[in-house]
Image (cartoon, rainbow, N blue to C red; front, side):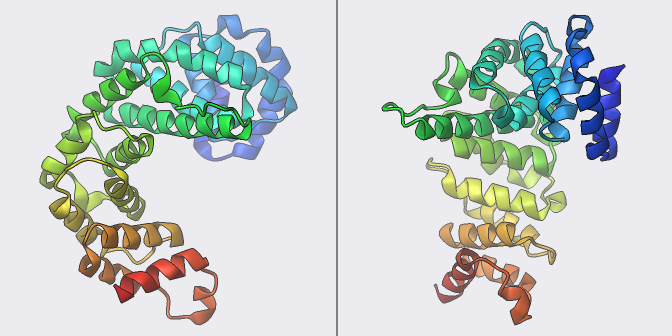
Length: 303
């Protein structure tokens, strides 16, 4: 079964071997797509996206696979896998195919929004925000007079974001740090102000598993708190994230600079200073940091 072979290569991390298999079998598989089940299509899209862009033969197969997905009636998990795969692979697919599949998926997600698992809901919100950015970038590159407002300008686009975020808001107790961080990042990135998730997270953060949040989770949440444009009480939530973030010593440069900057913007400069302990004292290592990151650290210390 081709979909399971792709899944096995993607799950095991043998991505180069997997891409070679897709390339060698793509032409034959293109003729058998009608026999693919809904699950086969979703699994194959997820696997190809996980292994990144295929070669010339694989790209042709991918186009036909996306077209076949338009006709499928996915279960909730298949919807989230397909949406995530679409957003990840969008730069490798014709814009017309992206728009065609997006239009086909939106009403199906609206139908099943209440049955999405936390990870599925979070992945769809991340995918919507990623597609939103790419659609806007495409119109700018084409120098269109009227810039695109992205996914949320589509029919039912805003309703979709609200429905999926509502589904996740009802399952916060079962959500992990990545689910919450990706969802808040996505909502802030799209400039959504009508969802119920952001206010609920800020209001009940004491019940969230903050003790298990990763450094990347903390950075994405803090960035989202700065970027969201609503009158919410963020002080205690930001402080709780800062306390968790202070436990890490293995930050990557981008996550550390985002977190330090966001805490300072949120009025938590004192809470941001312990994060700077993660900075190396080795001047040679510091020279590898970007000037933007070093400026953020210096600015925070001098506030």
